[in-house]
Amino acid sequence: MATLDEDGWELANAEELHARHPDRFQIPSRQERASLQVGARVKLVFLLRTERKGQPIIQGERMWCTIREVVAGRYVATLDSDPATSQVLKPGDRVEFGPEHVASVLIPRTDPRHPDYGKG
Image 1 (tube, helix red, strand yellow):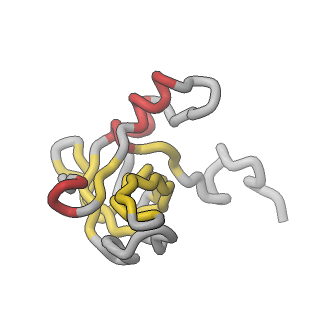
Image 2 (cartoon, rainbow, N blue to C red):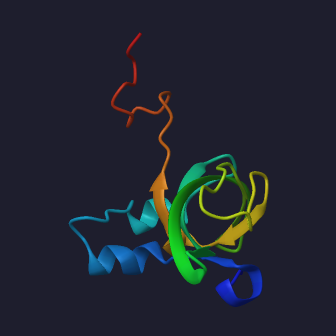
């Protein structure tokens, strides 16, 4: 897994963020986050090392990834988003993560759970 020290970025633990701020940071159920399949799109919280006014800071960005592999309960995805605050990542980069990192799951319109399912 990537680390701030070695790679200039790492993933925030969405479960910990939810535990600290349950009313402001909601995440899908553990069951949903642990049963994702290839092709699913998920939003992860990236912590990126950058600078502001010459001072090092850690900037958080929520970005979309598409799962390409599922291996022993872990995921390998490609980054779909283009980071706004750092150049250490770019669309297409490989991202490895677990269910604890998933902040959101994209529900396609073809899924009955989508609010617009069945509409024109």
